[in-house]
Image (cartoon, rainbow, N blue to C red):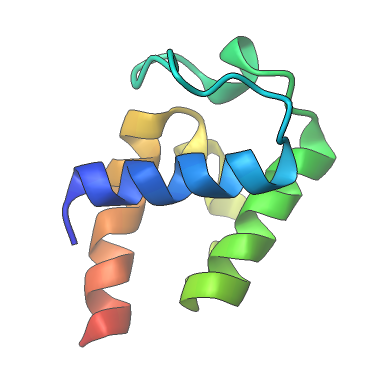
Length: 85
């Protein structure tokens, strides 16, 4: 799975948990919480959906690695590769 595919998955999940958010202009290098109206519960929902939909576990200590789309892709791309193996 490519970094762009991972970014699309994250945006799709955000679209499910925050359907009123405009995701058309999300900057990949800016913290998601600085761009979107996401609170800590929304962030937990993202982590839960990653586990539920894709079997990806994100330990709480790694949550800061999911701050932006770029950091999500950097952190999650190897995890998707592991889960596909």
